[in-house]
Amino acid sequence: MNTLYENIPVKNSKTYRSQTVQQVDVSQMLSGRDGQAAVVGVDVGKEKLYLVVRWSDGQTHRPVVVLQPEEIDLALTRIIHGAAA
Image (cartoon, rainbow, N blue to C red; front, side):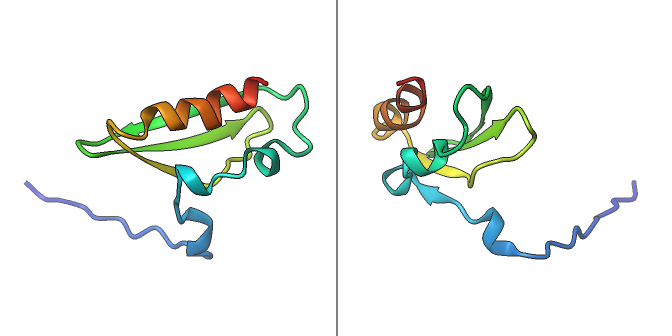
């Protein structure tokens, strides 16, 4: 069996750098997004969750790292409930 590996060039690696849930500035994330729908994608690992907010216009917010289980409540409060407020 042959395995094909693809190297995807990334122009700016800082775009894909994650931030901790404590670093998330919800007011900045929501700035100019009044009434715009968003979806939160979750990549689940054994010790960490990676959350990415994707707006209805296709733009995304930086990935957010959430340690589980200890930071799940914080993530829900800051990102999910903060966006609904």
